[in-house]
Length: 379
Image (tube, rainbow, N blue to C red; front, side, top):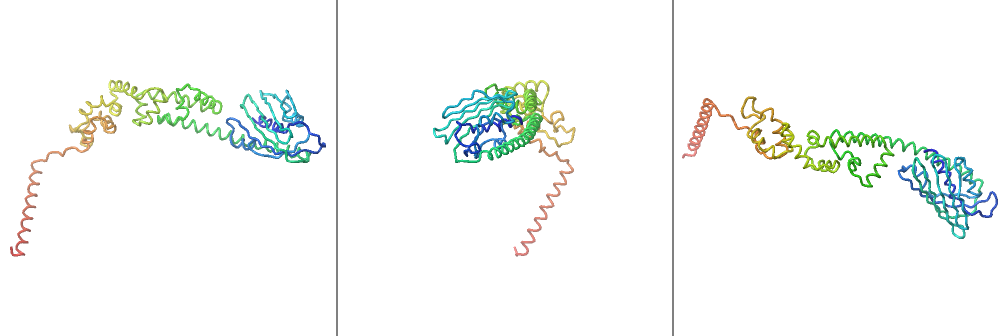
């Protein structure tokens, strides 16, 4: 990557290509050059270092020769150099499958130009730089060349620093993505897979393009998240996995879209197996048709709080089922709510007698108080 940016910096000199003017060896012309670069997946830091800015450049000698003699271009060969009164173009080819082409067009007075540089790199992709130039006046070409060399060194340094930062951010991003996919599988949350969930079973061009990009940029995350998406869709179609997703309509919809299996159809299939395998907690949470008769028989009028052995107590075997029925709001939960308020146990004869005696004593005390008040007022 470092060589790639070094060559790109050297090629920036090609923006100075033009039909040679007649001026002294150390005289030059000052140009204001505006550049804008487009490179897919390039970090903002590199964009700032390599393009999207306006600079002033003093042009003197044949810039085609200056470019080809640059130390960064020693591995490159130039070809197809063409020049007319208002146009200049040149191609170059370097080692490691790097190549490019530059084309510039001037106005008749040679005071303004527009140009395009397109570079291809077999490893890092493509880059296009668009430039415009405007002549400002005379300048010292020798001094300018020294300043330009220093600027290019600075650009290369900034590019290298930006690349280091980019690699660090990419590593962190990949690590965070893997953690997110781990958590999504553990919690059975399809929305946690992000792109890997939304494009899991799709074959459209957009998803394919995105996946190809992720595989190239984050190969480890792409491999691990794809494997975890496989595991999620497999678990989604089991009682345990479906139960873990719960009754969250949004999650179920996302799981349905991600895995391509309708939640309602899957629920019906799992309910049949759950009833057969006596997976009563699943039945209570997701299978209203199967849960209704069982809830009336094992949950209605029963309690979790009465002592063991009491016929009104929910049997241990049905604890999770009855709670699932109540939590799901399925048929039978009205009775389940009553189970937390058991009817009071019948009182013994002795307790009944005590309550009756207390009631009579209260009535007698109330009557005596009324008589006393009547006496005070002469009634």
